[in-house]
Image 1 (tube, chains in turn red, brown):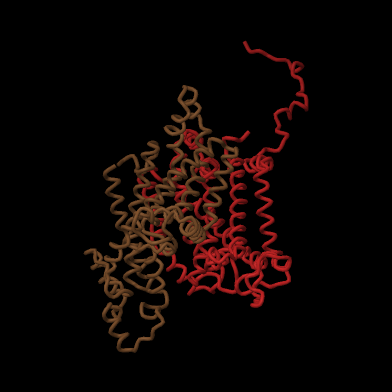
Image 2 (cartoon, each protein chain N blue to C red; image 1 turned 120 degrees about the vertical axis):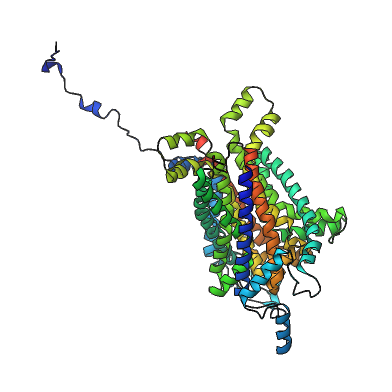
Length: 313
Length: 310
């Protein structure tokens, strides 16, 4: 017997109920959530402000004093800091204040660009290698070949690479950055691979795979966010390492040439002052390298906490 | 596992051969040669004889094959710069010194760095954490060429605790080892702290605490083991680099190690020396890279490097 339902029993749905399940607030993405938590971290924000200040000073700093970075005044050499020369003068009578901020341009550019290149190349390369490792015969082979290329790049003396680049390219800051990036990203790649080897064994990765996530999505959404801490630590070290690598190259006559200045060359030029007492020549470049490091480290710590998927609420 | 090891051994030899070949090509494509770098001007006949003595007058492919043949018999040729010593002599003299110094520095960096990192992570956000960050920041941003003379000035000259420079007794090793360890110490402390924080937030740590394990047992038996991954990763190339000597520290402390040859051979275009130091360093490097991969599977048995079929 068929049940007949008379039409009168049907009532039109209240229009308001149609939208009951609609999501009215904007979705909080991973990055927006991270930014919200980062803003609450006072120390991290102080680090960010400090980084911005250093960048602004690198741009306008050299114009704040009446001296140019290369102007020599042999009658006024090795003067301690005073109202006239805020950071003193060096052994050729050049103004250390102007040179410090002029040097900041080169050092910060070298450090930040090298770090960004490391980040992009290293994370993608290491991510793919780590994902492939142990994934069947083909995966094992891909991981193996990728990591042996890394070994080869570690093995070739990078001074030879720098000299060759300087022969091919115009001397200046570009071949230094290219050389640092060409050899620097391998460290990041190894670090990311090592961490991914560990993280990808966890159940949530298996769950995501079961739901059909492909490699790009797994890396982007699940694996990389879980190795963010190590990536950030590695990055904060890349910046000072690039600054010092540049100064070492200058020391060998392959980096920035006098009278140009960078923090690294100023510090290594001032090497003898430990024994002569002209402390300001070493103090100011070393202080600002440390300040940069400090700013990037506290900012990096805050970023690490903000990006930690386990702390997400 | 044995098959995996054998396979890796084959890859190691292939990697070394590629490094040798690429370095050989690079070295000969940069301008200058061993007799153009010391500022002397050799008369043409002498130059010709010198070049003939070191087979530099042969075509490059012939030189390459000749070099590989000698290398197979572990003969890395004469050092052009020193006349009397071979590359093998230089490595045999310098390596033990650099090795001792490097090992002392690495052990110091590992012990202090890991301890500092663990403490900072356990007291996340406290003054101890901030102090450890400050130590790490100073350790990495005061370069060794600044730290070393400072140590010499205060410990060597002013307070006269320790010898200022040179090599010989255990006391001679302390200052350079400290100066050398600061950078790695800072890096290890930061990595340990960061991955310790990751690990401490995981469920199995809560389980370990909940079943009543003491804090040292939770931290050292359960947490630290998984947190050591980035330190192990970092240790591979670090050991290869630091055990074969460092240019700056050995120069400042006048230590007769191997470090200076890595830089000077390239500056002097001392071809056999460039090849010798590169091969020696690379051989240690590829072994370290294998050990790192094996250490991964020891620390975290879930990690599989070889595919299941092996």
